[in-house]
Every structure is written in structure tokens, then in C-alpha cells.
Amino acid sequence: MEWLSTEARADLFDTAPIALLTIDSTGSIVFANSQATDLFGFSHREFVGKSLSTLMDLSDSAPSTQTAWIDAQGHRRDGETFSAALSTTTFSTDFGSLTTAAIVDVSERVARTAEADRVRTEAERVRLVVEIERVKAHGEKIVAEGERVKAADEKIVAEGVRVKAEGEKIVAEGERVKAEDEKSVAEDVRLQAVVDRGHLEAQLHQSQRMESLGELAGGVAHDFNNLLAVIVNYASFVAEELLSASVAPGGTRWEGPLKDVEQIQVAAERASLLTRQLLAFARREVVQARPLSLNDAITSMEQILRRTIGAQIDLVINLADDLPMVIADPGQVEQIILNLVINARDAMPSGGTLSIDTSTRAIDDDNFTEDPLQSFVCCRVSDNGTGMTPDVRDRAYEPFFTTKPTGEGSGLGLATVYGIVSQSGGRTKIYSDVGVGTSVSILLPAASAEDSRDLSATQKLAATPQVGTETILIVDDESALREVTRRILVRNGYIVISASGGREAIDLATAASKDSIDLVLTDMIMPEMQGPTVAIEVRKLHPNVGVLFMSGHAQPVLKAGAMLGTDFHLIEKPFDQATLLGNVRKILDQHE
Image 1 (spheres, one colour):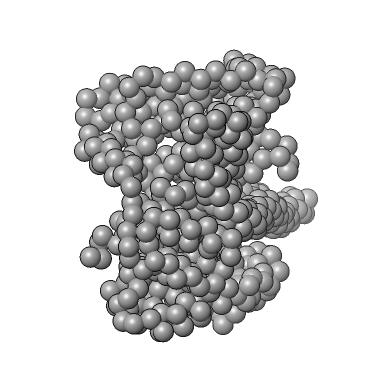
Image 2 (image 1 turned 30 degrees about the vertical axis):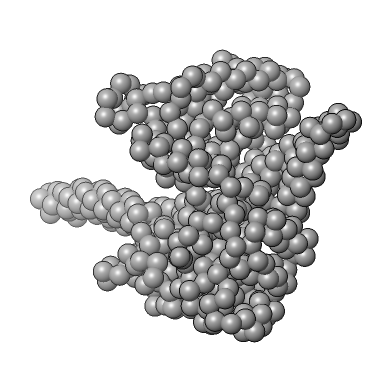
């Protein structure tokens, strides 16, 4: 599992502008980002298990555990070699010691320096040859003149000797100048290398800091989602009872408590949105693209957005009627909108107006112009803040680039927006003028009519009662969540067996008669034994059993479970009764 946990960092490392390799304690490469595959020509799979020494010849010494840059010779897959700078950083994880190697191709810089030295040396050599020939000719002329007059004029002979000595002095001076030039060039190269290394080290430290924050945010969101699932469903139980009581004769006194419970449900939904934002920041969310309404997403976030920007900024929302749906992950759409709103807020420190509007647009390859072949849904976030200069606007999407003071900006907000939109097949465009403000347009492909019909059919199915009589094995280490899940299923006709962990689940499955369990409903991440392993072990005893996973933090084990050969059907926490029952019924019907 060490390798798998390391690979989970791939999404964040792929935003780094340099090649990154992760090496375990045995010296084997366990992960390479996209820049590393481009630099060396190996695929991700071919990197795994290789030793760093098979890729790099180190000119000084082997890399230490401290962050430092050394010169090295790299070997690409096609046999080509290149000059490189290498830096390593070793850190401890729950799975052991890991080393991150950052590699930069400096071949062009070395080649440019060598060519500059060659040109300068050749020019100096030509100048000295010309000067020597001139001095030599002058000396020979004086000697010839002395021979002609036969006067043996010692003064003229002495002058010839002096001129010759002067020529030798000039040659010596040229050698000195050449040596000083070479020394100066070497110093310039050294200083530039120091600056480059400083930039690379700062980016590496920032990347590691964001990774640590992501781990913390993901863990908090996981625990909080378990609590929210309990709150949401117990509030639902109470709301059902109060609703029945309020419509009975003399039940008006229950209308007030019913409204109170409804406020609890609204607050729980808002809290669920916050945890999705945490998981999106941590890149631990499960990306599930589906047809959704951009207008509904913005409306559901309005209260959170108003609290985020503060009272000194006016929020104006203008949503187009009959807006087509888009194919996107709801959590990622919320992340895009929140990042753009935060940037707009920061551009108006003294207050202003922040506008969000939606529309239907068509674009070509370069501009947002009419194109009958593709329809897009546009979300535009505008402010009347400080604006950007052209050079800042051109770099706005670069990872780690920020104009905010140190410690106040990661430089990943717009880079994340650009990545999500590009992966969704969309486009982005920034319009900005200093002192006027900024407008960022996000265009996402409109969903097809068929996708929209599929969504309507799914929503209609979800609205019908999802009851049954099958036997379901629930596995979750959180007792409160396990109990509320049991109650939802039992009150809808199902027979439920509960287990607090993987070992107990296997014991219960062993004691049950063959094929008497119809579905395993298990948490993904649990102590001692994780969900995919539980599912595989139960399937050995009950081959026809269906499997449905639950999690609020499942991304780190998705690839691990896939390697175990288990089918993945996932319900994200916190879930309500309708979502749980609909997914349970769907899996059971597939295994009939």
C-alpha cells in the first residue's frame, strides 16, 4: 500500500512545472509526474521499479537527504543524454520514508554558455593574430631598413627589439583578458544557477506544503462527513414524524418544531457543501461528471458566497432562463465558482460590486464567437477592482504565480480552475484593465438532449419508493452512522446485518448460509481492513453478492481497490434516505 498512497499525490504533482520522481526507501521509483514522462520518454508504468542511477549519472556525488541542487547527466529512453540539475528531498510518511527528486533539463543553458565562450574566444584569437602579424611586419620592415643603409643603426635595431617586446606584451595581455572573461562568464553562470535553484526550491517547498494541507483537509472532511450523514438522516426521521403530527387534528403546535428541524436540515446541507470544498482543495474528492444545472449550482452556493465576500461587496447574480445543462462534477463546479469569487473579492479590498451571470455561447478555436457546431454554457464572474496589467494577465493561469503578498496566496486558484475546465472540454478567457476591473468567463460544453433525458429518467426513478426484502450486510466502524443506515433500510423492508469492522463482517458472512446475503454496504476506509478487501472476502463466501461502497474521502483507495478486482459503485457521504435507497435498489436489481 506504500506505492498506492504515494501515487495518490499524482494530481497535485502534475501541476508542478518541473519533472518530479518519488523514490521509496529501497531506492526504487514509485511515481513520476507528467513532466518526468515527457523529459525521459518513459511511461508512468515503465518508471516504476527503476533506480535513479539508471536514469542519471551524478557528476559530483549521490543526492543527499537535504534539499540541494547538483549537476548530473540524464539518459532518455531513446539513448539521448542531456545535462540536468537534480535536487532531492526526503520526508517521512505513514508508509515509510519517501524521497522526492526534482529534475531540470539545463542542456540549452549549458549549450548557450559553451557557444558564447567559443565565439568570444575565436574573436579574441583573430584579433590577436592580426595584431601579431601587424607587429611582426613592422619589425621586419625596420630590420630591412637597417640592412639597406648598412648603417647598423643600433637605435633602429633597439626599436625593432622594443616593438617585438611590445608585441609579446600584447599577446600576454590578450591571454590575461581571455582568462578574466572566462572567469566572469563562469561567475555569471554560477549566479544564475543560484537564482534558478532558489526558484525551484521555493516551488518544491510550496508543493510539499500544499500536499500537507491537503492531507489535513481531507482527513477533517472525512470525519465531518460521517457526522453530517448522521445529522441529515436523524433530522429526516424527526421531520417525518413532525409532519405527520402537524397535519393531524390539533397538530398546529408541531408546525414550529417542524420548521426548526427544517433549518437543521438546511444547515446540514450547507455544511456538506463546505466539506466538498475541503475535499476539492485536498484533491480527495471522487470526480463523478453528470448532467447538472449551472444555475442551480450557483443558487445553492449564494449564501456561502455572500458570507465569503463580506458585507462591503455587493453580489449581483443574473441567471439566464432556459439554460442548458452541462456535463461536469458538481464539486468541481462549486470549486471553480468559489475560486473565481475569492479572486474577485481580493481585487476589491475597499469594496465594490461582484457580478455572476450565465448565458449560452458558441466559440471557435480562438474567440468566443458564433459556431453552429458546438454550444457552450457560460458562467462569467466580474469585478470592478484593481484589474491586471497585460503581463500579469498572461501569466494568471501559471501554477504558483501570484501577485499577493507572501503567505496570502498559493498561486493555485486560477491554475486549478484552468485544469478543471480544460479536462471538461471547456474554455476560459480573462478580460482585465488596470483600474477598471476583471471579468473571467468559463465555458463548459452543453449536455446533449440524450444526456438530459437520462438525467430526467434517473430523477424520476429516484422519486419512486425504493423498498425491498433482501438481506444487506452493513460494515462501518462509526456506530452512529451504522445505526442510522440500518434504520433507513429496515423501515423500508430490508433485512439488515451490522458489523463494526472487516473481521466481524467476515465472521457474519461465514456463519450465514451461502448466497443468503444479497448486498454488502461497506465503508471504504476503516481501521485494520478497508472496504475493497472486505468485499472480496465476503464474495469468496457469497459469490453473487452485490457491493456498494460508502465514503466521504475515497479517492486515496480507488486505484487500490481497482487493483483488487472489485467492481466500484460508490455513494458519497453525507447521503440522505432517497440517495441511499436508490443506490441500494440499483445494485440489487443489477444482481438479480
